[in-house]
Image (cartoon, rainbow over the protein chains, first blue to last red):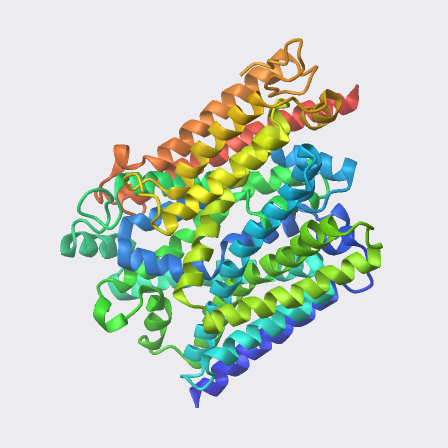
Amino acid sequence: MDWITILIVMCIYLLFVLFLGSWAGRGRESSIVEYVAASRNLNFVVMYFLMGGAIFSAFAYLGGPGWAYSRGAAAFYILGYCAFGLVPWWLWGPRALRAGLKYNYVTQAQLFTDRFQSKALSIIIAVVSILAFIQYIALQMKGCAYIFEVGSGGRVPFWAGALIAYAVVLIYVFFGGVRGVAWTNLFQGAFMIVTAWVLGLYFAYSLYGGPSEMFRQIAEANPTHLLVGPGTKMSYAAFATALLVSVLGFVMWPHLFMKSYTAKNERVLKQTILMYPTFAIFMVPVLFIGFAGIMQVKPADLGAADKILPWMFSNMQFPPLAIGLVLAAALAAAMSSQDTITHAAGSIFAQDFVEVLRKEKHTEKQATLWVRISVICFGAISYLVTIFGGQTLVALLLGAYGAIVQLLPLAAATFFWPRATKAGAICGLLVGVLYNFGIVFKIIPQIGDIHAGIQGLILNFIVLIVVSLLTKPMDKDHVQKFVSL
Amino acid sequence: MSNGTGTSGYGITIFKPGTPPGVRARGIIFFIILCILILMEAFYFLFANSARPFVLGMPFGMFFIVLVIAIEFIALLILYFLEENDMQKEGGR
């Protein structure tokens, strides 16, 4: 009956998160700035975990060890992009914050739409973002469903596990808004960090006598596993461009970019960027878990590499209370990303799609209600994708994921190049996104192992510059207000 | 990396008008340092594509990545305090 204890621990955890998230939004005014940007007054600790929760996702907690187990040194790229992902934010984060305060933006597209005076741009950004988000939310839901399946010994079916995760996140995002997301991420982030360190070091010491001995055995058994390049699981070009596209595109994710508007001031924003590399250090023991599994189980016996963390647990004779806590931490990883993205998807659809298409603006209450309805809908769509998603859809969404980095030239042009025009911005974005999809769907041949996003990005910049120079400059006073922020 | 606004007002504008030359120089230096660190991570295999020696319990490649992260943190820390110092001076004026 161990599974009952495990499920009780997980349920207690979920109830606590539900309470915390709903409580955080209690007594707050019903306005868009509060619901989407927490009235622009989040402090450093909350901002730090809010941003950290986005990277400590199901991918990091389950996929990270899976990569270390199956691909070895290729997993080091996760540390690199995690550490440097926020660095580009130092350049435009404070400017975006000032712009948000001055012109009342709450989403990324509102900034770009205002700069380039284009509603079409808002709709394109909304569509690209939402396509990418649904895949991301579905990934987290799958992670949650799998955790429930493992925790209950198969008694909670996949669909029910995903449904529980959807319902819990939905309730506190609905009532708490971004403030609910932030406070739950603070708790979940701290919980995950402690668990990751304890587990990573425990496995390395209990199974091998320490990390050095663990890696020595791996290097002897499989000399190429701790290397990248020819004859390994990742080529040089694939490693370098995957890391570069992740660093350049990380803050371009709309749910992260729009957090520029939630920070209390520039100091808080810069403190968050300064401390963010610590999350990469927290990831080191997470990778240890995957490395520890290499000498313990053969890939054929394991099935999917992402199952390595749960497998290690089910074969180590842990007490049910400990298993419950660890699975709760894995749930925390998945939910801390799912909530941020669900909230952002709802906000973007309501603000950048619905609001843009309407002739008359919604009132504050109506706009907030639209965001809440959108949050429910996107959660539901993501749930359906999780349960019924086919391969074509997955491929489409994977393409959208690579497309996010195509928003980078818009940010660069907004803050640093007044000569950029509406036509240049739209053409560049479309070329970059379509080229990326072309490679994903194998219509366009991929050049070497260079990431499709990087190839699209180079084209995107070229088209933006050429088309802008060929078209009439935009009003000087208007464009100058963005570069002089 | 100059403020090439020129007379047209449409040139590349890296710094806000009126930014002191010292602050501009510092911005450029840190920009270059951080770009080099990012490239060192992306092309780490040029320097440390090796399992041995094991340092702090990690294979050499992993240790190198972590070392660059530590250097990045120090660089950001210095930049933060320099900018903080500037902000306090501005506040004091």
